[in-house]
Image (cartoon, rainbow, N blue to C red; front, side):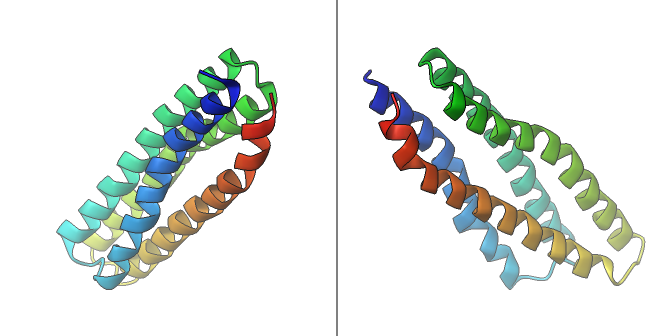
Length: 141
């Protein structure tokens, strides 16, 4: 594969899960998070997203390192690190709010909604940064 094709392949590997999450997560804004199956489905979607981004980030980092693109590999490595660390942090907070909701805390669904928004906005910011970096990564040899 040519160097540009390698970079484009890595970007596609990363863009696919981020794009899917960007399209799927706003649907949860239309439903109440005090409904237990809905909140569990939201939790599962975030959990899966973090796991997929971890794998995609690690694969992308390794591919870029093998291709000799140290700076690009570091950038993708940061995405992988955010997915690894962020999953633990984010899922703990989500579980805390789900437990609080189950214990009768009437404000827990509101805090869960804010957490949902923060996850969507964080993914959107990373997606914008990734898309903005494509011309620099694809042309740097």
